[in-house]
Image (spheres, rainbow, N blue to C red):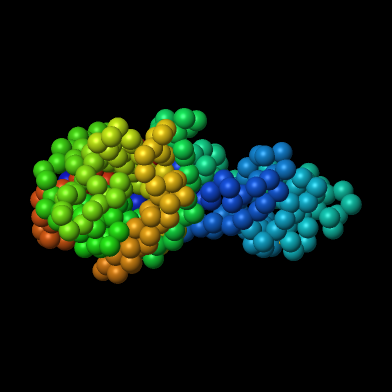
Length: 348
Ligand code: FES
Ligand SMILES: [Fe+2]
């Protein structure tokens, strides 16, 4: 039986993540009648929205001769392969083989696309590569509350594994250095003790943002001291709720959707409380993009490009507390989650 110290395979996370929902494209980038491609956990996908609004996510290879279906188009309400024109409906059924006057039923049946479960929520299109669902999408009421301003930003590709990105997102001890001219302009590098609660599906950290009211630096609203609650839903859906002294709030989410073991696409969004006193929503997104770009630099320049699943001697690097408490908590709980999920594993 696997114990805390049992070495886990580096392939295990991708096998287990097949049962989780991952974003593959922003809703706004897939209007009705559009076809696109995405790579999730090493699997090449075709994703399409049909004129009636229905969504299709399937293995990106035509059942006929394996043509890349993401290079195909929707014609007369059906996905038409660009090579020999076979046509598929949104359920993945092959409905027409143009080279045959009467395509035999058995050939049509054999030519079903390999569909994956797909859903749309929070302004993103989510795919699950397994029939088995390990957990539904986390509930974030602020993202669906019409009184809040909700913005889905363009995803940003990182040449690093998804765990590097999450560790970075949770970490507060880099603000004064990696973000010295943006988010961390007034940040204090000393991290106060933080309170962490662990749950079956992740953990919650409640701590102040490490800001310093320095006479040399006048922090703007987004850089000033605030309360910060970071909720990580394993494996990779993390929200940060910021509560400012004037009562304003923001909720951010990051979901680094894994492309390969050393590459991820960071989907992210921001909800702003009604009547927020501070920069306009567009400026907030611009500011957050600049900060994320600085984070990308950090993640892409770490060795190795992904955090190992097994702690080496001394843990996942030389960690210091409380600065690295969140990184340690994430790696520890992520590993426990993998072991629990492997026990319940359903063939994919
Ligand atoms: S490869 Fe798609 S129809 Fe031939
Ligand atoms: Fe950062």
